[in-house]
Length: 133
Image (cartoon, rainbow, N blue to C red; front, side):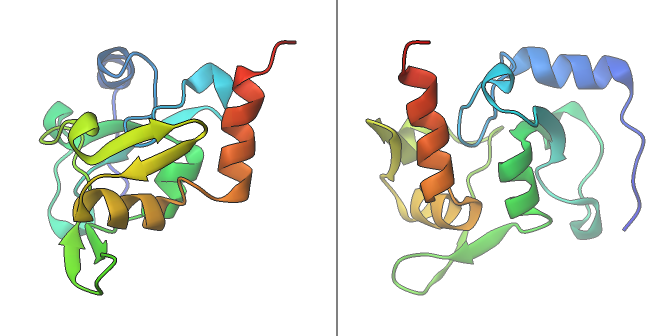
């Protein structure tokens, strides 16, 4: 797998388009210790291009968990694609329920499970954002 160069201009475009929020779990880059990264939605090893249409802003946790995956198993053990930030609306697949991200579809379920949206650490991270200093 090659590491394509992503220009600073393209990185800025991707970050601004996402309002500096992870396009998978919606955490703002300033609310996560490790910040956000530019993710190839369809990885290069699967033929994905380094273009604005194939790039998403992702927190380190979501990006590392997703890796080069494009699909996973849903709650019935069936292969299902992952959430695609350029083609899907987040609210069609997920909803916040307090500090948890609940799935509304098989795509949402598979994505949430694979990316670990509701691990103890991720829930604690979201709860800490809502507490006054």
